[in-house]
Image 1 (cartoon, rainbow, N blue to C red):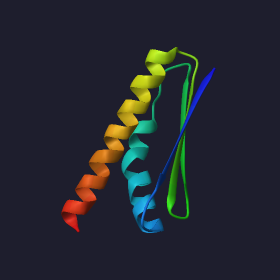
Image 2: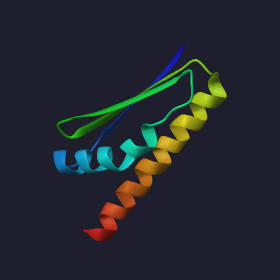
Image 3: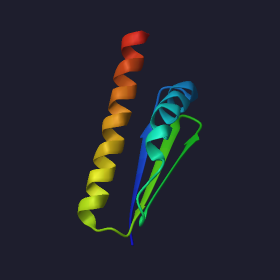
Length: 80
């Protein structure tokens, strides 16, 4: 099993929570052999990906999560 842990630090707990909520719908449903969890810890967003499907699947999943995160952050800056 391969594991990827992504820790993103934000300026405020509100920003971390907003991004968490924005990417959460992308976490379900996930294919068999893949597990994604995310949580906020004060100003941090921590995303954990467990993958039994091979390195290409892990890379694609991390890339998708980072794209969703980037879109959420850019949208928040545009709205603010």
